[in-house]
Amino acid sequence: MARYRDALPQLGEATFLTDGGLETTLIFHQGVELPHFASFVLLETEEGRQRLRRYYEPYLTLARERGLGFVLDSPTWRANPDWGARLGYDAEGLRRINMAGIALLHALRDEWETPQTPCVVSGVVGPRGDGYRPGRIAIGEAERYHAPQIAAFAEAGADMVGAFTLTELHEATGIARAAAAQGLPCALSFTVETNGRLVSGPSLREAVEAVDAETGGSPAYYMVNCAHPTHFEQALAAGEGWVGRLRGIRANASAKSHAELDESTTLDDGDPRDLGRRYRALRQRFPGLRLLGGCCGTDERHVRAICEACVAA
Image: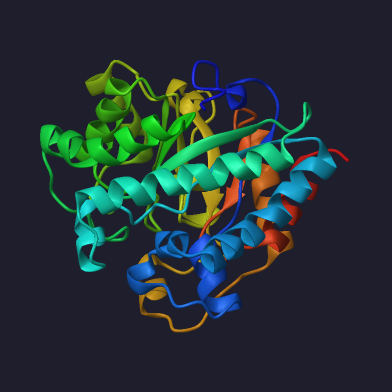
């Protein structure tokens, strides 16, 4: 059952960790075939579920070693109607697989949580379309589209919703409204291009302020993911109120653009120590950044380097 739905612990002063690039780790480091970049298909078999457990365990080990909290994000970024249909999933199949993703995280929490390492179960939502290309969708349509997945998370006992790689304001707003309708706190994470702006045009400030205005500030917090720190560090401004709504970072290992990454057949895993130093610099400027993890190209090496750079031993 949900444990932290009414009081997310990562909203306090403590630092929390999360994982790295799930899909890129499975594909490039483990040789796993993920059709349409969909890791949720692994939930269908015991072998796949064990592989997912082994993926999360090094990150949970690090969090326990350092006495830090952890946000467990489900492998359901692609488990929505458009992508599910390409893989043969109807509405009931998606409900079942989304609930299975939360069940896996509950089992991990039962094994790994300690008083010093609270583990928050987060149901992950991805964009309706491609994460690197914006799709036009009305707010009401987005709310209706994402509602069944979020309802499945609520039924399965998730603590919250985490929506990642968002590029379009109406879709982000619809997700926030769908989460609020289910009584689930949500975190919205935008991705930006090398110029620090969403591919659909708005700046991070405009995105956060627009969604807050449309939803009455219902998202618990915001994040940035699937972009290198060099792409967004200049888009942040110390002293501006909206930056206080940013709570976490899940950056890419590579400084390449989305277009370059999309066309790449090899993994650019960057420099873990350099990435850690960049996180530390951001934390020094913006101490409210409390949730630290990685995105494409990152693995436990990167998250460990980030932890070592940002958190006292």
